[in-house]
Length: 205
Length: 205
Image (cartoon, rainbow over the protein chains, first blue to last red):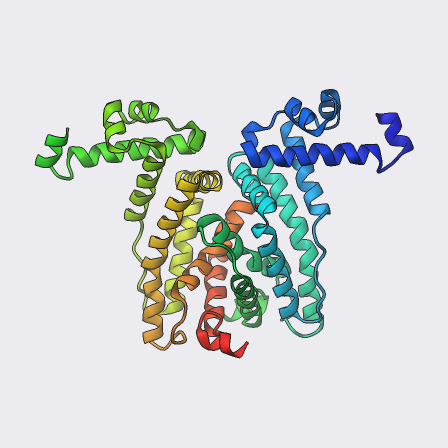
């Protein structure tokens, strides 16, 4: 397998990784973190158990790689030309992701896993850090265009857009609507305009 | 036991309920929803198994009663005389709750449980509905004082204050700071002032 991988980069190795991570996702959705065992992942993925042990070795390593893969496959930032447009696109993406049947269940499962397992919590934090950094560029562009105050905390703004959608997703039984998404974006935009995320604000208050 | 309860309301019955719910909380923290069994709850609470079966009968009923009890014991809304003061008090309370060692673990465990179990999800939604309704009065008062637009969606504002704190709590490993709490309140306040939560806004946009 290792030899094959050398000769066909992105071929068999990538296919094995995709199958193993897909099996990990499915087990996490179906049975939670406690239900993941490497031999079961191997069977579900249709690969040898020794491959899974050699390449990942542990459940935390599998889940960490799964979250890396999820970040790699994520949608790039929007670039609509306005901060309102970009934040609304971000909110719409979050809503779409959490509302999609499989992805919604996967996010629920991984957040639940992070609540009880520190390695998963760290990997999940890295996943969100990467997603937030990708979208934070929208704020940097907005500052250049004069749409946001200098030194606006870009990461905090992106997290603020996601926050009400995740909070509703995790603590209510109400489905996320397009109005919820628009409101999440517009609320963050209002806070940016009021200087809540920029240093000048802190001096004034 | 039932006879005793009739003669001493709030006495033995209340003590049994408190012990059983405390045991339920501890099992949820230690072992998650799957780790709760009625006989174990009875042993940990120091009460008879038949009492637990007769009064609660099932794990979902226990968890639902636990969440009712948590709502009953929650801190009443603030009344500082200003919307900013009330929202900051709310944010400070949420931060304090999630940062307290035992309560933080309990909230993590119950949100994780809700992610995998529909009965828990419904009970958790009712818990937050009650907390939100309690604090929504702050917005109604602010409307009367002219601090918020007419017909501001009071519940949405209260949820908006909590959202970034819960989101950070569940998706990062960063501890919640007092600055995070202040910022959560001030961001919600800026969105209220901009009309994000009032109907006039929706007509304009």
